[in-house]
Length: 149
Image 1 (cartoon, helix red, strand yellow):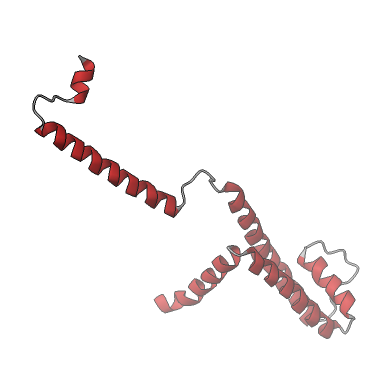
Image 2 (tube, rainbow, N blue to C red; image 1 turned 60 degrees about the horizontal axis):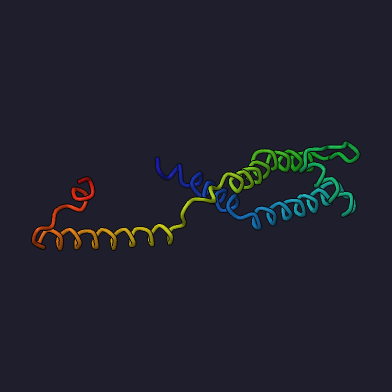
């Protein structure tokens, strides 16, 4: 059963990698447009400019209709391009920007948390030393008890 899940785990790890890197996300988008344009040019036997225009319009799901695929290969490419954009690329871009907007800037970084923990350990040790010193000195009561008198 675990073997059946391996491809899905690999796809998930790939999506997480793309989602966490805007540079990689934009590069993959540009690469997808170029590859789709090149394939469309081959399938439909049209120029590079028209192919690039078709790829951008199709990927953005605007679909002006001025250029539409005639061959089944180009239509399958259009389905793949639109599906990839709508189901993967646009949600990943949206999620990336949303996560940047939601980040708590007041949260402590790991090194700051470690520094705070170390400082608390020092304060605790000093308080224990002070309590031990007060307990051994003659006639010393609790500082809190003295303050309330």
